[in-house]
Image 1 (cartoon, helix red, strand yellow):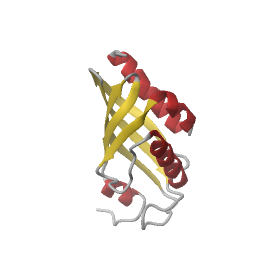
Image 2 (cartoon, rainbow, N blue to C red):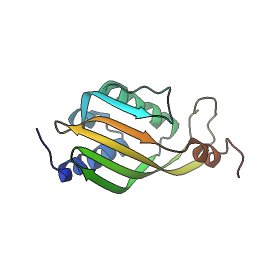
Image 3 (cartoon, rainbow, N blue to C red):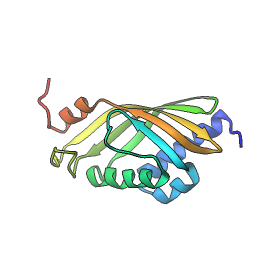
Length: 142
């Protein structure tokens, strides 16, 4: 099944809507069962299946229960969609060795999604951990 760039962008919008509304059940229609998520900012977090992506959402919700991801820019070419997105949320759970701070972080991140058969098959995402940890009070300000 070949999809258009506009269909691919609509798929990514639905993905972020499902994430923001904490509806991992919707992922079944959006994400391939053998999806792979790549992220150098979280090398210990593995997401190589739909089930692991759903678990990642559950874990993210424990840490940032009020988080919202807002798409700022979507660009598509062929079966790839690039997103520039803002993440905003209050840390209510631990992040690795860092205890809950009760502080809000707002940061931008970039992602590139590969679409196959009308579903997200793979994506690469990156952000600046130092910016986030500073905003949460875990690192000194500059």
